[in-house]
Every structure is written in structure tokens, then in C-alpha cells.
Length: 260
Image 1 (cartoon, rainbow, N blue to C red):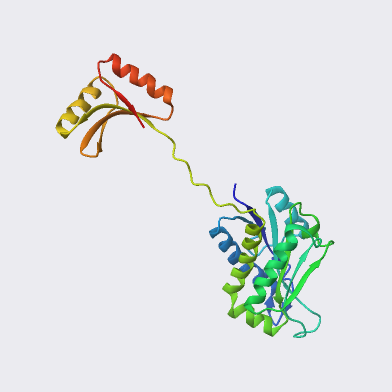
Image 2: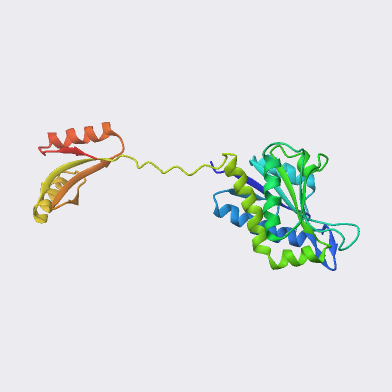
């Protein structure tokens, strides 16, 4: 089973979140969440969303949705705000407590966002936030810059795709380092058992053998092998089925060879 994550776009609907000069947090978070989710999906993560449109969900409803989906991780994306405009800038991540996989991921996301140009304000414990307290899986809330910081907004707009990639990279690197993400196993091809009922250098002779088999009610086809034409009857997943079919062919007077 692929690793699964619930991505939560902060606010929405009747709740715009923080607002600055007409800019609404709920719009920035939805756009960024969808961009992050696309990258994670391209890298093999099963992604679910609390919302993909401008609708309102309470924090408790978001936690319940993640719990009912049974996802492995919960990531909520927000924009920050400060009482005084243009006084504080940077990114910070919030988690229930400073331990475990969530702490590693929060740190990694912040470090990745710092490479884009944000100031890293650190990882902080917020045990009373509903989406961190009520989710049964590890959860991180990322504050992707201050919405009332012109510097952060300029960075957000001019480096949007890099920011989405930074968050996704933080997630993926953490999971890989923790040994959670595994390389997909190469599927083992199912062994097929076939019954050879003739080997000919001349295709016309092979065609006559094919016709003889079909006249007796046996399935048959011609398979080219090296410089020969093999007449094959049947293809079976189970060895005992192939052996039973081989017996029927022998009773009908055909010389057979069981091959894979």
C-alpha cells in the first residue's frame, strides 16, 4: 500500500482566514495545497484533501475526515499573520509536541523553505490546536510566510512553484530517511505453462498441425522460436491444469512437450 497523506488547506468558505489588502489566506492556502499534492502524487504518495474548493470546514471536521480516511499523515497549510503589518516575516511549523516523525518533518519542511528565501522561525509545539490534537496520525501545520508581510508575499508569488516543491521535498525526504517510503517491488511475472504439440521449420507444416488440433477441439496457435515454428496448445497458470491438458492431448494421439 502506498503511503497516504491528508492535505488540509486552511480556512475556506465563510472563513477567509487572515486578510491583508484584499488578499485572503484561504485563497493562498488552497492554491499551495493543491500544488504540493500534485508533486506528492507524482512521487507515489496517495493524497487526499480536506477541501479542493472554497468551502468551510471546522477544524474538528478536518480532523474527523482524516481519521475516517485512515491516512498515515496529516499536513495542514496556512499563512501566518502578526498584529503589526510588515513587522515579522518568515515560516514556522506547528506540531502537537516536539517529538517523533512529525518533528522531523516539520524541521525538514522549514529547512527546505529557508532555501527558497524565507526566514526560518522554527518549529513550535501547539498542543491545543484541534487539527494537531484530534488527528490520530502524526500532523504538521505549516505557516507559509506572513500574509501581512510584503516581503513574504513577494516571495510567495514570485517563487510559488519552488515553495510547493520545497514543502513536498521536506515531506518526501523525511519519509525516505525514516524508511517509510520503499522502492516499489518489481512485479514477478507469473509463470505460464504451455504445451508444445509440434516443432517445424516450415510454417505451412505448423499451420496444418494447428488446424488438426483445432479440428479435434483443442486450442492452438503458432509461436515463432529461433528458426522454428512451434505449435502451442493452451496456456495455464497452474501446473496441474497444464498436466491434465497434456494428458488429454496424448490420449488424442498428439506428441507433446510441456514448456514454460
